[in-house]
Image (cartoon, rainbow, N blue to C red):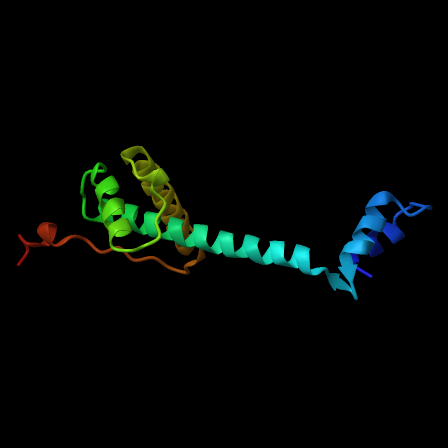
Length: 136
């Protein structure tokens, strides 16, 4: 029996409900029938491809911020990647989306740095060399 049917059996439902019968029919020898399993595999594949597309766009936005390029270059970078054969969805290829991606990246880096500072036992700060130049 499937896990979902077992849950229904433990719940107070005296006659088998329509949902329990439907779940029982969709289960074959304690595992999901081939059709629901195929849907689950396809959903996982779609999720991974969408995730890889978003990783590419986030990396491109990070590169634009790091190189201090204008956000309007984001669209041309995405077009170039698509032309070079990468599977990139051009939906988010505008300067507004680039600014939002960079904002999310900045928030995550700030949180990660805050956690590292909070978890550290001690801190040390380095001063910049221009202040020390007059000493030597």
